[in-house]
Amino acid sequence: MGFLTRWFGQEGKVRYEFETEDGQVWIAKTYVEAFNVSDERLKEELKRIVFVETGHRVKRIKILGFAQVN
Picture 1 (cartoon, rainbow, N blue to C red):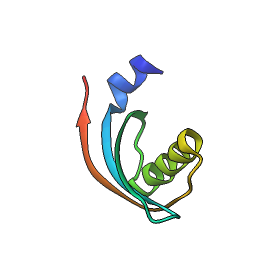
Picture 2: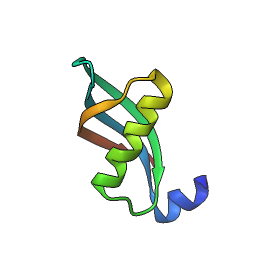
Picture 3: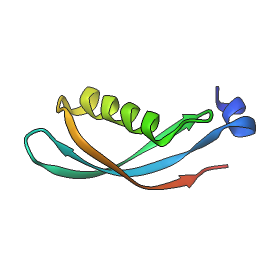
């Protein structure tokens, strides 16, 4: 999928802040590749990533920035 996202989509690092259900606030960054994704869809995917990596459910998430890599 790498060459397709370079031509038609977006690839880069997204920095975001999230709060877990136990009240802890974290800032993280993740590399993403996407085709025409809305902010809401991106937030839902980031919530899933955080849950898989840490085992904590996300209560609130805020996208702080996106740096496109090309």
